[in-house]
Structure formats: structure tokens, C-alpha cells
Image 1 (spheres, rainbow, N blue to C red):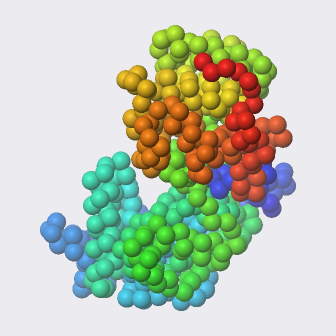
Image 2 (cartoon, one colour; image 1 turned 135 degrees about the vertical axis):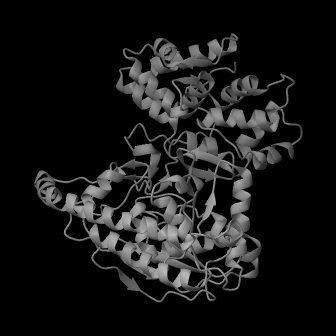
Image 3 (cartoon, rainbow, N blue to C red; image 1 turned 90 degrees about the vertical axis):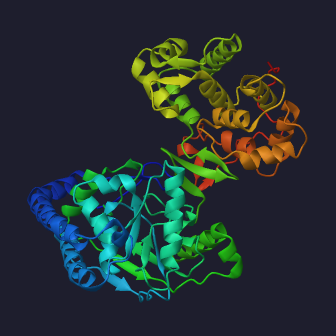
Amino acid sequence: MMLKDKGQTPHPFVHEVDLTAAQRAQGLILGVVLFPVRVTLATLFFLLMWPIARLRLAGLSEAERAEPVQGWRRGLFHHIILFLSRAVFFSVGFLWIKVRGRQAGLREAPVLAVAPHSGFLDMLVLCATGLPTVVSRSENSKLPVVGALLEFNQAVLVNRKDPESRKKCVSQIRERVTSDGRWPQMLMFPEGTTTNGRALLKFKPGAFLAGVPVQPVLLHYPSEPDTVRWTWKGLSWLGALWHTTSQIYTSVTVEFLPVYTPSQEEKENPDLYAENVQKLMAKALGVPATDYVMEGRFPVKKLGKLSLPLEPPAQETLKLLHKHGLTNARVETVMNDMIDSCHSGQSAMVTADHLTSILGLKDRKTAVKICSLYSKDDAVDMRQVCLSVSAVSGFRSLESLIHTAFTWFDADQDGFLSADDLSGLMGALVGIPQYDIGEMFSALTTRGRPTEASLQDLLMTHPVYRKVFTEYLRSSGLADGNHNGILNGKLNCNNGIYNGYGSTNRKSD
């Protein structure tokens, strides 16, 4: 059996199982027998954990629950839950867990940093590490059984949308990992989301904020097919469960690397600490260490503090329009008409029905799909569509695009950009919102007042931000069919526009 990603690129957020007819038949036969039996057994063990997990903290006050559980409550219930947890994973086909290296003690390494993070089945690492405490989304505490297990674990809960909750989470993590052994070890997945394991994402700094030693832990799934991955696109969680339980067994190796003790510089700079541990783990895995992250619902590459989507909405929009018979010339005409429409003072927000008419599409489904690339609703800001599509396609020069964007996003029309104006402008150019614009705005204001000329100068000469145009926006790879313009993990720069800053001689609007 072979597992392949679509396309020719090591896109870390896409994973699909590509099986021959014979392999599918074999999996179907085994799955019909093994899937119901294994899922039933795993569910039974899972449900058995529910009341036992609740008993651990039963009768304790809120103040007592905020302290590490001790005594008979820890010893008795801990071993029962550990046994049942292992039984769950044994049931779904992980008949044994191979361990390499030695797990460090609590005082040696208060934090275990695990990567790569592949899916919900990664939780089996808790069995191999003795059920350390974890960090989880607060929403998970309301789920049946899972909520009880998080309570049992005394997990740190965080609402990612609430700044106060995030601050409290950081405070709790610091307190626990610097408690000199009062709290158990903490286990974290610093990538923050799941991938296909072919590259390591940029590590989030949470595990490294306290500046204490961490032990890197690697997860290997050597079995073929590799069915455990559950990513942004590709195999669903149910598909991963079906394919995994349809195998006679699934191999996994948990590898403990030597403890990493941070330098003084790393203690003072958690981002540097996280980056160095990421590089160390990537080298041990034999995969690239990237600056890719999942931000909201978009997988992105970080350029400075800007977020550049790995699958730019504009490129996907162009593919859809070409698929439906629109030539480059027709697309250029439509984009120019949209720009003229926005200049005329008409509302920039359009519904999918209106977009169908504007683009001259034969069916509404394509317009709905285009809207979904930019927003969660069946409506889209025309400025985002026409600016981003014009940017990646080369229909207009850089000067023309910046002039148009500056005119639209200079909210009070005083000739100067505020930080919010710049956020909207850059979000429209790259196709997704830009929330952390402070660094770029600071770089802009160091060149004088934030005028159109200053912005032009920044985007043409700044060593970081000029790459938005010279390397990123024009690296669509559409001409040669390269998926997302990413070749061997690197952005394709062959279509850069540094010389002349544009591919047309169209005058500025």
C-alpha cells in the first residue's frame, strides 16, 4: 500500500491515502470485520473511564481542585486510568508502543515537547509518558468523557479567542513548570495543529516561556499505509479511524531525545528557544523546519509578522475562473471593471449572486466557492478579490496596485495610513486578514509620514516586505501547474517582479 500527497509539494497540511483497487478491497474486507469490533471495544474502555475520572476530584472544593491532587486519589485512580487508556489504543490496533531513549524525570525536564503532531491518535503518547498534564481548549471540557478526562488530568484550559483566558493560561503554565516538582510534568504539542509529518511547523512559544529545560519527544508512525494523519485537507478523522482499525496492527515509536537546557539568551527569548528546539527535532526527524503555522482557518507562512497563506485565495480564484472558461484577458477585464466599480463609490461588499453576475459565471456554486476562500459568509469584499487576483496575476504594476489600495484604505482620506488602514490594505493584497501589523507599521513610519510614497518605498526596498511582491504574490506557479507555487518546501521565485516592479505598463489609477 502506498500513501501519497496530491501534487508534488511537501505541503504539511494535506494528507490523503491513495490506494489501488486491490488495496481498497483488502482494507474493506478487513475493515468490515475489525472496525466494528475495535471501535466497540475502544468505546467500552473509553466509557469506563468516565465515572472513574470523575471520582478522582469528587468532593473537593474549587480551591482544592486548583492544587495538584495527592495521596490515595493520585495513586489509585491514576493507575486505573492509565491502564484503561492503554486498553483503548490497544483496541484500535496499537498492540505495542516501542520506546527509544529514556524519559527524563520531572526535575530534569518539567516539559515534554512532542512532535510531529499528526492527529487525535497522538494521545497515545500519554500512555508512554505516564499521563502528564496537558493544555487543551476550554470547549473540550464540555464534551462527554473528554471533559471528565481533562478534569482528571487537571489540564490547563484556554479559550483561544479570549485574551484574558490566554494570559491566565500562560500564567498557569509558568506556575506549574516552575513549581519545583509540586505539579507533574506537562506535555505539549508545540506545533499547535496537525500535519502530515513531512515538515515541522513553527513552534508556538508556550512550552518555552518559563525558560525551563524541555525534553523533545518524537512520534514515528513507520507503518504503511500511514493512516493516522488527520490534517487541514485530505483524510477525515473518520477516515483515519477506519483505515487505522482496518490494519492488523499499527506501529508507533516514541523516541525521547536528550533534555534540552536553554542558554541565558534562550531563557530571555522564548521564540529563539522554540526555534532552536524545532530545528533540533526537525534534524532528528530528517524533515525541514519551516515557519508555517495555522492561523484561524488558514495555513500560512510568516514573513516578518505578516501572514501569507500557503494556498492564496487569489490563486484558487484564478484556477476556478480558468476552469470555467475565463481567459486571462477576460479575467483582467473583469478585475478592472471591479476596480472601477469600487472607485465609483458603490458598496465593496457583494453577495455570491452579485459576484456570479460580475464574473459572468454560469453557476452560482463557483461564486459561493470564491466567497468561501475569503470569508465565512456568502458575501465578499470586492476590494480583496480584485486586488489580490491582480497582484498574483500581474495584471497591474506594483505602483498601480499600491495607489489603488492606498486610495481605498486611507479611511479618512487625509493622505496618511493608520495602523488599521495598513492592516486592511495588506489583508486585501494577500487575501486574508492581517492582525499583527505593528512591526510593519513601525517600519513604515521610520521612513517618515505614512504616505503612499513611503508605502511604495517600503514595499520596493525593505529587505523583508519587498518579498511580498518579488517572491510571494508572483510565485503562483500556475503556468507550470505547480501546486500553490511551493516547490520542495520553498516558494518559487521565478516569476518575481523586482525588475520594473510589474508586468504591465498600465498607468496608475
